[in-house]
Image (cartoon, one colour):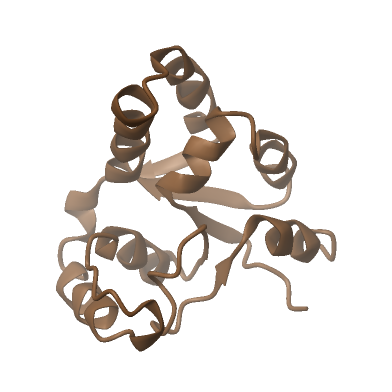
Length: 143
């Protein structure tokens, strides 16, 4: 198994899971070995899922504490790359849904040459390395 990149982009599902306590230990352990980055839109999406979707506003403070471990990049700074990323996501056959919703995440990953820690397949076929939580943790044990 190859090792994860030294910089890793985190998507909203990972942040939500960590706030719920499902992968917070993994996130905290990994933060000692890699640099975590994400976009401001990912943090907003995680906040929305927690407050409105899960109806667990008490977890917002946990999310805010976890966000302190991340470098948060404004989506506006990625605008020049986003159209190429939307095209790559639209044409990525493995995801099969044509969703371009996460173009900002792909743009960040491309911009900082990072892998993506995610639970979805939207990035499959884009040429970007993605990690599930168990494989990410196994890969980190090699570092």
